[in-house]
Image (cartoon, rainbow, N blue to C red; front, side):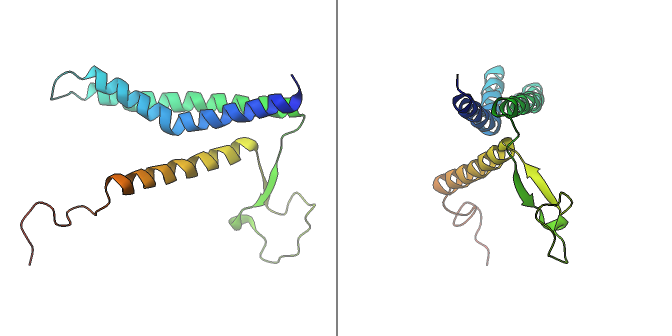
Length: 148
């Protein structure tokens, strides 16, 4: 398999894993916890299991994404890095050399970019869903006595 094709496949797997991390894991554990409760008054056990399960599954998927990122770096021959200067490490004097490693730039890997994009998509999706399903603010013309 050519390196570029394998690299693209690994990027795709990292993208799927990051979406699974933000959407699949919570939905899956919520579904499992809902199946464990039979009575209208559920106990705390299924909710504790869900919370622990979400945390442990997210850690496992995060470790898997890290392995995929390292494998991607091996396959492509180098770790692709984008040089980004974070604001708190930016020089106040300016004029620093672009070639120096000490100019406050931090390497950003492909996995970093994928995770940021997946978080932005998750927040945008949730915001859109919330606005579509609940377009009016809570308690506007809702129940309760009128306040004068």
